[in-house]
Length: 119
Image (tube, rainbow, N blue to C red; front, side):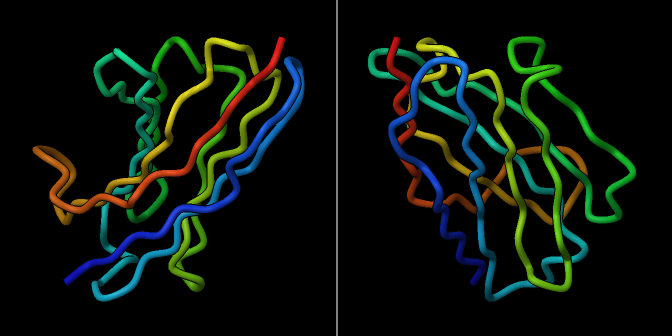
C-alpha cells in the first residue's frame, strides 16, 4: 500500500516562496507518476503539475506555469513542489498524488498540507 506524506506548508507573505515535499513509501516509487493538486475552501480540487517516474514528462497548469517547479528524487522517494512569487489566490490545501500508470486516475493521496499566502 502506497503512503504519501506532505510537508512544508505554512504561512507566507505574497511574493514569497515555499517548498513542499511529499515522501512516498510502500510502493515502487521510481516508476510512479506523481502529481500535485490543491483545493481552496469552497472550490474543486485543482490539478497543478505532474512528473513521470523517469522525469521526462512534466506538465503544469497555466495558473502556476513559470512560478511553480516540480521535481523528484527517486533515491529519496520524494517529490517536491517549489513555489515562488506566491499570491493570495494560491492559498489552499496542497496534496500530492501517485499512480503507477502515466494516465488515468490517481489512486493514492497524501493528507494535504496547508499553504496560506497573506496579502
